[in-house]
Length: 416
Image 1 (cartoon, rainbow, N blue to C red):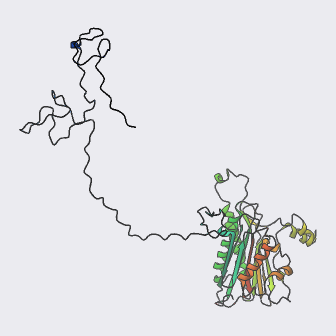
Image 2 (cartoon, helix red, strand yellow):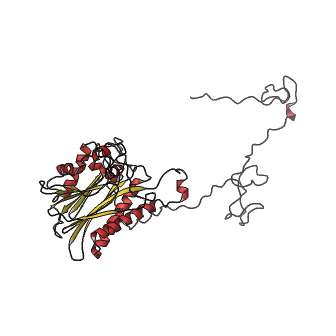
Image 3 (cartoon, rainbow, N blue to C red):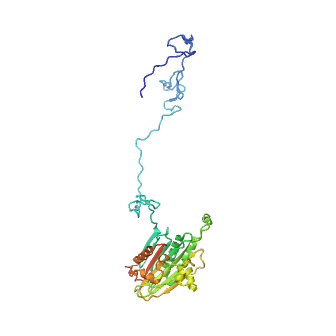
């Protein structure tokens, strides 16, 4: 807002503070002699800006230097910076600033953005959630499929569990005489144990690696299977060798544990091995021939039947039926790997699976009814069908299935 100019205030009498006119010699109110009033002080800055003023000049500017070039006493030379409270001198700045040279290394390619499996439009953030709909994305082990040579396997989390605690290993190699061999290992983590998913993964990898190393050396397949199960047990036991400080916050947790089952198929020979309640089934291509279950469970129900205390139907109807009596782990009983060998007289498919499948097709006849007729020539398709059967039945557990053809196709033939 604009303001009107204001007139300067009249001087006041030093004695009575009454206004007086300029030029008055005496105060009209009290008669004070104005001629003896002190003159107002001069206004000098508290902080000099350009050095001390020369004596007697009455200004803040330094006295000029004499013509001879010698500065007056107390005056700094022209090329010397005066000592002041505030400095306005600044270093010279370049008119242009140099730019940083470009990095000659090629830029790393950006990782392709993951799209949400639910809405198919949102990006997935680093924590595994969709930025658009917030849907949690499936983890890597929630559903796994692998096909190598003539053997294939599929593993799925199921519909009730929060993670997949199953694991598998499949592979193919040749014996010293050039005979092809295929193998599959399936492990089921014990859910009541600590880190069952790590136990199953360690066991399957150790067993698979042992078989792939032993068979080409000429080790008999049944002996190699025994060695593989022992190696798997050592791998699981090693998981329990954690520092004592790691158990301070969970002192009641037990050691990691899992079950194991495997099969090796060569020309005219089928070898199986297991500890626990995962199974191997033989399903001939000619469905007129009888199928067979090739393993016996390490479970409470199996013990009751073997002891003649219950019929199979009664034992498996009991709530204790699936309590296992054999497993891999540091707190397991004495390790007793089971191995067996067979010589089927006709072609067919070997099904290696966890109880996540055989709970929905328990007997050999029931299993043969759900195995596709072309499973021996299309093992990956057969494994997918069997996993789908378990999910359609309710998917109460993790489910893992491996399918191997028998006899093994000649080397290089692959699977159809």
